[in-house]
Length: 117
Length: 110
Image (cartoon, rainbow over the protein chains, first blue to last red):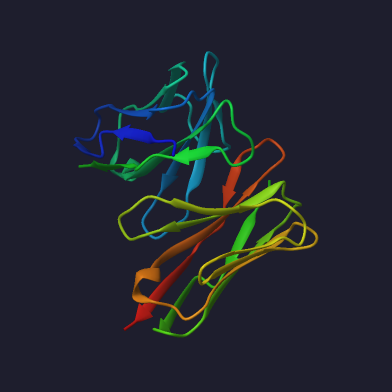
C-alpha cells in the first residue's frame, strides 16, 4: 500500500527556535497534503491543506506566519514551526492524497512529536 | 463549520464484551472513514463507507453508515485486549477535507 513518511519522528527544541517537519509520499504523487495537530488525549485537528505549487489553505485560528507550509513537489510538503513556544508542543501528523486515487486515497504519516522546552 | 461528534468519550469493558461507538455529523457527509490509534501511535485507516445505509464487516468489527449520511457507528463483538486504542470517525466534507470526531478511547480488562 501507499506509504507516507515523516521526518523527524521526534524533536526537542528550545523556545524561540524554528523546527521544520518533512512529509513525503514514497510511492505515489500527492497534489494535496494535509497537516494535522493532535494534543494529548484529543482528536486530530486539521491545520492546513497544502497544494503543490500554490499557497496553503489554513484553517480558522491557525497562524499562517507561524506555521509555514511549503509543497514544492508532488512528493514533499514541509511544515515549519517558527519561533516555537512550549504551547506548540504537540503531535504533528501529515496525510497525503494520491493524485490518481478517489475518495479513499488519503494516507497518514507516522507523525512527529514536537517538544518545546 | 462542520462538526463531527463522537460518543462515548471512553469505554472500559471486560474482555469478551461488546463495544460500540457512535458518530454524528452536523451536515451530510460525502463519506465517512474510521481510524484506530494505538497509544503513542498514529491513526491507522480501518474502513470507508460511502453509500447511504451501508454496512461493512471486518471480522469482529461492523461499520454502519446512516440513511441520511449524517451518522455512523462501529461495533466490536467480543472485544480482545488487542482492540485497545482510540477509535476515530472522520467525515469528508464537500471540499474533500477530513473532519475528525473527538474519538472514543477503548480500554479492555483482560
